[in-house]
Length: 114
View 1 (tube, rainbow, N blue to C red):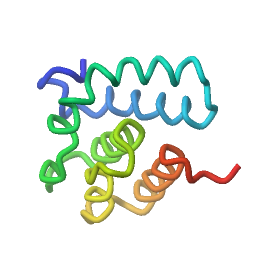
View 2: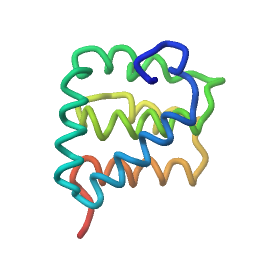
View 3: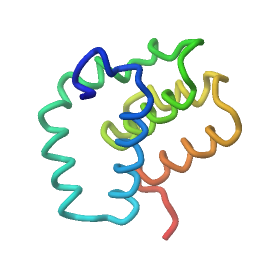
View 4: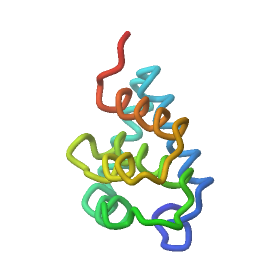
């Protein structure tokens, strides 16, 4: 669904993908990590420019959508993608959303304490 424009700004599918990726990375489910990598291989050449450009962070977007998309960007693209940091610095998130995104960044970028 998220490959299509009509779903780009719909929070629910992004939230579901975000939650799933965090679970997969947190629990280090090796088979699912391989599946994610396989799916990402087909999209990594175009998803970052389509979904995760810093200029897409703008007032009026659902902050829950921003958190979910930034979390997905962090898990799939890694630290080199600027979208998550742009969301964090935007001032559009409340304290709880900011903490949630920071937790995701730690998990998906391998900084989580075991």
